[in-house]
Length: 136
Image (cartoon, rainbow, N blue to C red; front, side, top):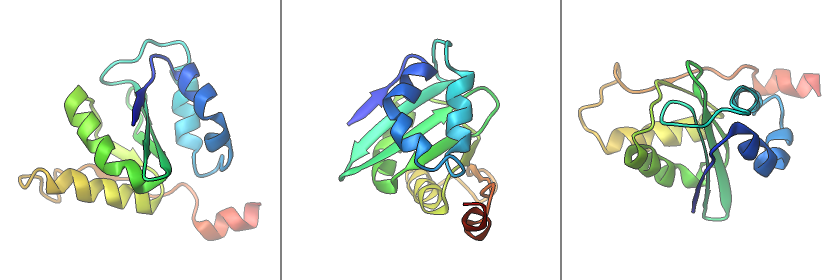
């Protein structure tokens, strides 16, 4: 199931528990939601929630920032279909390695012309798991 939000504030209030469960990991998603708080969302600024196979995957993008992925990789297939269906725009993605790897795998399997140079860029995590543990 896919939920598409009209405003960042709706995305944040509906998913606050998930986002605040790991503020370090989901910081970019929280940041994007704050930027988009009162903006009417479109193909360049969007917020989605995908519920699939018992997990929740969140995707949010604002302006020139990366599309931030948070939650479970279970909804990656549905997310890729929704991005294509709606014509949503992104160039970079930021999220946990399991989610971003699953996203890239699905995104590139549907389009054999995507090469290593044209596939979306996976940005490195802001903090390594070891650093996150020492901060907590």
